[in-house]
Amino acid sequence: MEIHQLRYLVAVADELSFTRAAARLHVSQSGVSAQVQQLERELGLELFDRAGRRVRLTGAGEVVVPRARAALSAIQHVKHGADEVLGLVRGRVRVGAVTGLTWPPFFDAIAAVHDVHPGLEVELVEGTSSALAESVREGRLDAAVVAWSGPLQGQLGRHVVVEEELVAVVAPSHPLAGRRSLDAGALAEHDVIALAPGTGARSGLERFLADAGVRVVPRWEVANPVSVRLLVERGLGVGILSSSTVDAPDDLVRIRLAGPAILSNLGLVWRERPQPSVAAYAVIDAVRSRDVEDRDGSTG
Image (cartoon, rainbow, N blue to C red; front, top):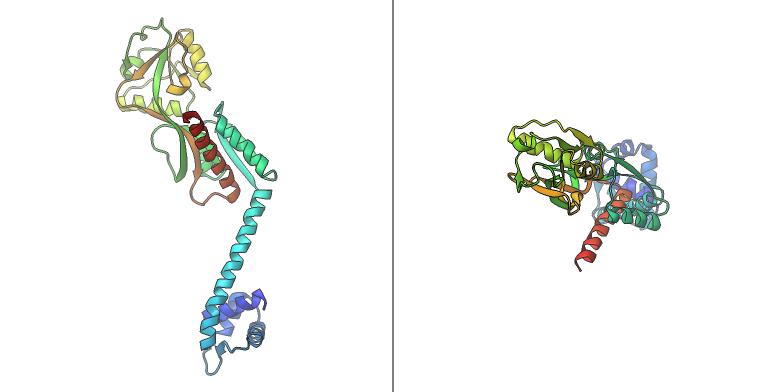
């Protein structure tokens, strides 16, 4: 019994015609008829009633055809399994990360994937959060660690690593150092030190100002939180960062932004449709698993 014989059998059963089955399979009618007859001889059963103008399944055919369908489905599952293995052995995954990312579980996950699947090529791309998220949406990246504030656009799966408030930070000598909270109007009266457009903290700052109807052009615009802190330390303005990235020494002052909390998120995102490849899932699952292990270790 050959696989192609089962395919021919199912096609004739679907079409109830050897002619239409042959056209569907792109083979000759005589070839389909000969293979089905050979299968019938091997089984010792007559599967089709060929009398009259129409082809009909016999009682034996009604029993055998569903099993033939199940066998073909099982064969397809075997093929899918082989494709998955080949994807992990020969696949390529493009992963993004915000510039300057220092989150150890992410790099631990990349190293683990490299160790377990040495044939899998993982490419790391750095950039701003908005550019990386757009690349994921358009399929240029399989996944990315990005920061965002507010709702994420597009059908993106996500695993949130950190969710925290944006805060202002100033030097002790700054005129705002004595404030417990800071509204957008007061912020607009001072030089602002912000991360570049496309970062999570910058999008949160823009939301904060837009909600208050205030327009501010940052006096200083830098690429990473360390530069923000260095400028703040020297009294050059008001820095806006997520609370964990402030990591301020005792001689810097944090000030809460007035109104509803502006939340900044850091996490892994991936495109949900179409589904990620098996190779991409290997990286996604590794990152999520390492994050969970890191949290359990830090809280246990």
